[in-house]
Each structure stands twice: as C-alpha cells, then as structure tokens.
Length: 47
Image (tube, rainbow, N blue to C red; front, side, top):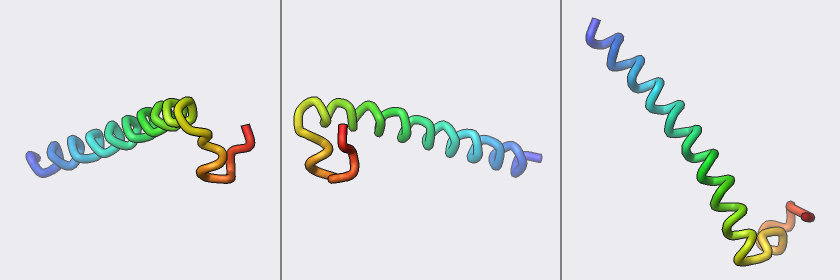
C-alpha cells in the first residue's frame, strides 16, 4: 500500500516539476529575449 502511494507522489511530483520547468523556461526565454536578441543566439526564432 505505502509503495503505491509513494509511486503516485513521485508521478505527481514529476509532472509538477515538468510543468514548472516548461512554464519558467518559457518565461525565461521571454525575459532573455528582452535583454538579448534571442533569435540571433539560436537562429531558429525569426520574430
């Protein structure tokens, strides 16, 4: 029983972490894009 609960917590924690990384990654990209021209750094974003 306890093993199943810890597995669920691990899955939920992983999903939450992924969502946080995606959210903050997008936010950081916009922030860095304001400071530096992000399209020049990557060459893939022609905005």
